[in-house]
Image (cartoon, rainbow, N blue to C red):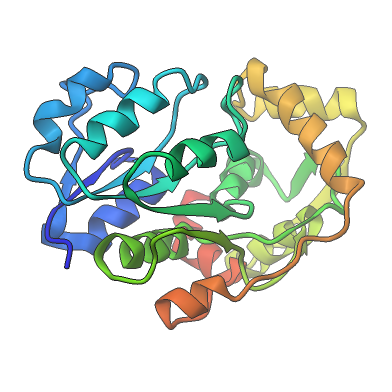
Length: 258
């Protein structure tokens, strides 16, 4: 059994949940002394570690091979949560590096994070309308606690080596439906207002999303709209023994943020 786990991104949405669920087994990667862009800086943090929860937060994947090599010198297991925002390394390429790392490995591929609904918090605090584009776009919203629960099982248990876990929430909801559910939980008559792309772009910038991300996001939504509705998986339940949390549950857990 794994006894000591190094957690990267320990203050982020998923990493914080991994820390909480692991309890005393968890050790946070110290941001003031270790930097994933410099693999050699990880050495001290990896001493005595059995497994690593590795989130890749950087926009470049240049350092990932070096990080994996450094992990392999100290630990035996890695659970990897990659990113579609790495400009020079696709998700498939990231996973191939994990497979070739020499470590016991598990890859987690999540559907849309429920925390993305926080982008609307400012609009919701200001009134009863949420304005944006692609209101009919369906997403399988996934609670960060469920991502963490699967990661913790893979970090501490057996039988997860070589698995790519595709996680989804329990239902597909359009953006307009998400807004309606937020309103129902808050007891407010929230509604979606559809915008064209130029207006949606301005709204996303007003919502606080960085300029470098806004067009990427709208392009992704356009591409998703042209594809079939997401398929729901039962992976969360199969791995953890508990069904994936609903988006309504996520809103209830985060109601104070709206």
